[in-house]
Amino acid sequence: MNKTTKSNLITYGIVIAAYIIVEILMLTGNISSHLKGLLVPMTYYAVIAVALNLCVGILGELSIGHCGFMCIGAFFSAFFSRATENSIPTVPRFILAFIIGIAFAALFGFLIGIPVLRLKGDYLAIVTLAFGEIIKNVINALYIGIDSKGIHFTMKSALDLGMEPDGDIIVNGAMGITGTPHNANFTVGIVVLLIALFVVQNLINSRDGRAIMAIRDNYIAAEATGINVTSYKMMAFTISAAIAGAAGVLFSHNITTLTASSQYFGFNASIMILVYVVLGGIGNIRGSVIAACILYLLPEMLRGFNTYRMLIYSIVLIVMMIVNWSPKVIEWRKKTFGRMNLPWRKAKEVA
Image 1 (cartoon, rainbow, N blue to C red):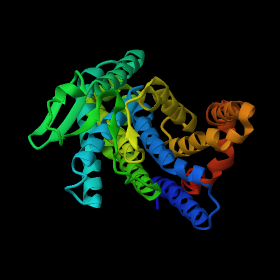
Image 2 (cartoon, rainbow, N blue to C red):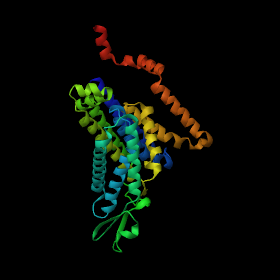
Image 3 (spheres, helix red, strand yellow):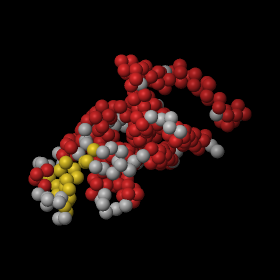
Image 4 (cartoon, rainbow, N blue to C red):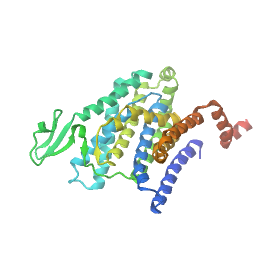
């Protein structure tokens, strides 16, 4: 077993072990109802952290608009679930909702990527941030209803839909979508997280992944060696958007009322996810998952400390930053844990 395969299996093993431990604690009644309510959000924030790390860490492009793709996946899947709630059984409907949410997020990722990926650095970050804000505000202006005549759409008010009395308003402007089926649970979240990890880690270790990282490391050299830079950047960005859409599907099927609010899809939410990626290690997929889980649960777990809650949270952020980015700590980690990589070290010693 090579080093890469072993590292991937360790990542899957950590997620599965955490899931088993949590399930055991829930069965024995050692987890409060409040903490149970945090488990699904923890998984979809881990999923979107993996998606963003693919874009920021592997592709090397700073995006602050991934909450926009999450919003797209959430609303398209929730709309489908509400519209077919009485006509399609629960399990097939939820699977189809996932496919629809991922597909539309990937489509928007592709369409946005065409002009956006021509930009670099701060300009790319500004444009992706603008995209996230535009999506949020457009959805807040939508009114969509369904009656026996079909789908009605307007951007004025619900009164202008012109539906029959028995019609159902599904998207009600800033009030969003109410009554989305509550199909997401911790098990589904873990399965989606494992699939996202499998897709991203296999992409990274594939020929395409090496080409993407070559573009990240040296754009000009990669282009000079014959790598289709535009194609590979588009591939990574679209896959990243699709995974963010999957996180949105989990989000929309875990709450009663879905609204395109700044709290969930705005600038602060995008920065929070970027913090997960940075503190977990840019390019470190496993670190993104661990950081997302810890940093999401920590403020909620510290609510009992009241005044000192955010102080402790800030100290943890600083410590994680030092552990991940301090040159001396990195050197110590290489000396301490690097000796565990025996195969290549033995080969070096023999040479």
